[in-house]
Length: 581
View 1 (tube, rainbow, N blue to C red):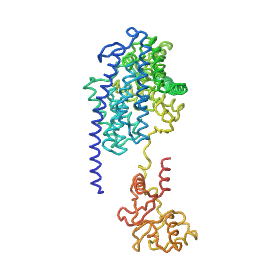
View 2: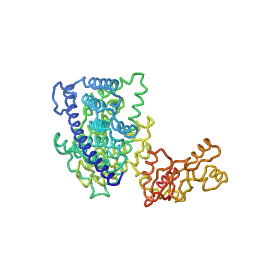
View 3: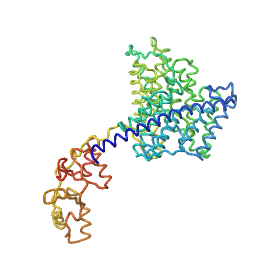
View 4: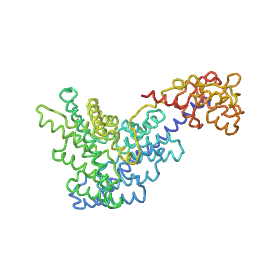
């Protein structure tokens, strides 16, 4: 393919992917809006017996003892959907999207795009203490994946649309387009390339725009103007470090507790079908004493971030919300982690500030500021996505003074989780238990930074194609070091022009065919071999090797492709990998 033709094709694919990203972004925003309305409708029907989508707060005043039964019924319905629909609806959604990207060529079943939001709406609408964002992220990703499969796009393009749908879901939920982009990069793409970044940005931009039209402008949480204490750094920042350590330890503890609870469900002598109902029953008992923990709870998060709750309610949220989340989500029901962990992290930060201000003379920590940074640190450290949630809180506050405290607290919390959770996160532990090893460290591919010329053997063995197999055999038997060191040899004609390549395996086959070795090397080897150039990237050469099913390539001059200047084989690939150390 000529360079101009290749450039035009890349440009056309980029335009196509951007248009598809736009479609996925719009679809994710509409789905987010419909899911919110469905959750509100179900909540009104089951708790208040009215057919409306008005926002409501669940309380025992209107429900009474039925507050224990309703979540169990919701869990039973989820069990039926998981058994007869798809088990992929279980959990909070993001690990399933990660698994699809890393191990299933980004393919998600179409029915997941339908069943996941419905199951989440039922779980949350019947009192589940979950956020809608996890299911929206998974559903947006499923829409992108299904569209790509329908259009028969490549695995990389499918991954791009899946990530675009997931990022758009995040942006449409919280009105945070930047955080949506970074979430997709940190948890799904594991790359930063124009081919994926541009469609992703288009998707999150349009998703946020559509969200403005459907739900109004502004962020999900109304936040005032907290004082982050930047002007009093010496007095305030040490406490931020302590808060970061506490948030990191809580993230570790919560992550381990969630999977410990899942293990206890595994030990139960009853079918997995009944687990969500049992979890719903436990949730109902907690809700009977602390109804504030039921449902999404965005209004409670706003109250915490603006320091409107009393000590008693803060303590109740810190204890009851994680307990409700663990007992219900651990059962394998459907729901998101972000909102409940945001509530818990914010309550921890707000409570920490009040505690310090009460017991330390002269301390004036802002409860709102501490709630915001702890919220970001708690989930960012647990998910190993720190940058996402630094940007997320900055988008919520639009306050430049939040940047330094945010980075400090989130980084400290991240250090703590790296110490105590070396290989897993709350997102990847489930995959690791399935034997799926996940590396969330972002690193540029060394094969795309090293050229063939840097690692090739610049002293290749070049033999005449007219040489007999028997003659080469004699030289090998005599122990010529250059011949023994190389597993393959470039073949040239009388003008030293490349005409073929022969491997030791070819020689074995030639002797099996003719024990006298009368054939020429060119007749025994491969004429017109695939080649590479010294200035090509190792990744390009590897792709060519994989496409042709060969293990080595003659390296030829760019100015004269018939002149052999090197040899690129498996040892050169290993040499390139060593450059990354």
